[in-house]
Length: 208
Image (cartoon, rainbow, N blue to C red; front, side, top):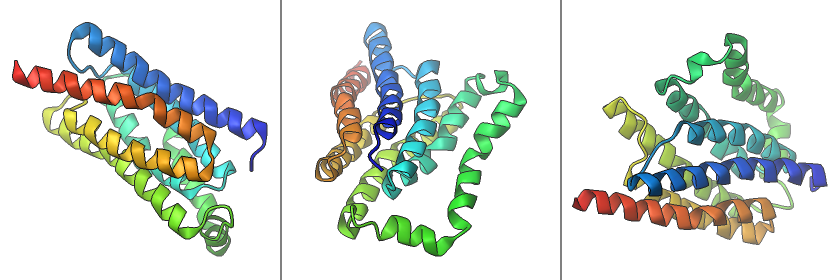
């Protein structure tokens, strides 16, 4: 679906993702080291919910896959920072169950789901694989970030997170150019400078 409202949802999601990177970057520049601010994770969760809806409306499995992987890692980071427990319990339950409910809807008619997502004439299989691989690599950065932070009992954005971000983002931009998806192109392009700069800040800190 290419309705203007669908693109509006996608652009709003990317606005939150771009906003998290810009805020994180500015705070890191001010502190002269890589920061993991609370707002980064709040914007991440909001953007993830919106982008999941966008991917569903666009019949784009690779986008949906990427959001499933990182969704609960955002919640974990909010929890370890003490923000998650401040939300009303019903709201927390609703947010936590959202992916479960969406999965149940998709699997309620498995054959239709496979036909809908994997046999989409607008997204040939090779392109779906490219996009999904890019999303997986791009999202593995949060798995790495979670593991790194879990071992240190703190929310941290290590240098490996930014390196993986560059690789995955490059693949997604290539996919988006072929798919002619302005939402993904704009959203991923914004992060390139910030990813590179965070790598530089991390290397500079290691040398000190």
